[in-house]
Length: 207
Image (cartoon, rainbow, N blue to C red; front, side, top):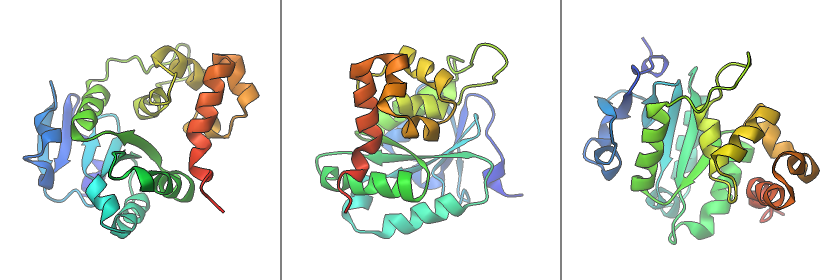
């Protein structure tokens, strides 16, 4: 059986064995951690059919080796939604936009910047706890907590605006492609400009 297809039970996370003594795992609150030595390239599997690959500042500063890992992650045969957590620190800041462009635009994966393992731990706890603020009203089905978590990281966008945006734009890619005028109708001009800048700043350094 391929482990990448086996989601952990509710309230649990499956972690790659290399994270056993990490600050990220030790800071998880109210989450039971199951360690697995054969997860493949993924670092964590979540009960909501999400998987996480963590890119540290050390990975980024060390060179392009992490890109090969990201490509393997993207190509893994998995029914999980793939999320990439990337450390955006003073050390990695100068390379962050290039990493963001590679992950989001070249590979089509969802990227979420974190300040470090403690912040990542809080995010994983939020996604695993699944308090169902992610369910849409009506018959549209569940709202993906990974996508909601990403949208909430945009400056000026809290949970209320994030929920409103995801009611209007059903996927992260549709939100990325939305024109400022479309966003304004949902969140107003100031937040619309911030959202548009957040998703398009990675292309500003391009040729």
